[in-house]
Length: 317
Image 1 (cartoon, rainbow, N blue to C red):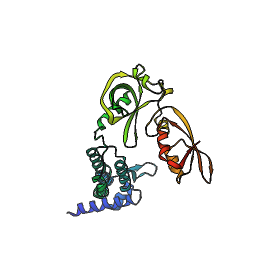
Image 2: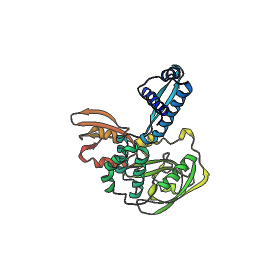
Image 3: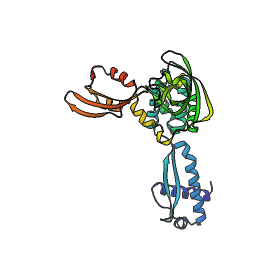
Image 4: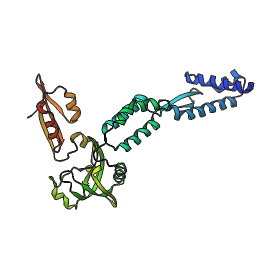
């Protein structure tokens, strides 16, 4: 390595060190310090920018050398961290594994790409080792049916306000029925993904529902959709009547939709936080040494299933 190249490398490393330590780089001062012109310092700064860009993918930290017009110099700007931290990627992988929503092949593909794309390259092996045992023992849902592409097609229909027509296998009697729907959202609950949708106004199957003119959507498990067709026909839901997914989610249990109602009960169990997390609309009306008086606004019959699961901890009022 010739003397000129060595001095350039030393100069770039020195400038990079100053930037990392929060110093402001003023070209005229650096040019005087190293006995070069300002164009040389500018090229050094450009080299540092290129280096930061090259290492961003590997290390996950996106930094940039920017010109501060107010201070009239260059400084290092920590733009954002592109990759997830070890703890973040581990938490997400654990949530996905515990969801048990996907087939084994889908789960393996999702986890591998999640680690490859989102974790810093130096930590790939560590994160993979931490989830390896749980991934090996993963139990896929009984339906064993890939459904991600179907879910994506439904998502596109929602975005475009397109009607969909589905052939659906009902849970209660395994009968296959055809429905023309206005899809409004995709939701996840207890191992399964669902599409919430309004029946077409002229669909004759409305007469089979408990609430014929229900103002809230019906719920369909996506893995039970046997056939899906996106129609050219569009639908429109007035803004004032738009479906609020967050509000619906707070009030539905086990994805059993139905009539909006209020329930009131006394909870005498050990963990009131678990109740309030399960029922986001719940309010504590009273409290004594025996327990809590709770009131909540909920949809449908799913709440009855949850109350029965609590056994002696709950007394209806």
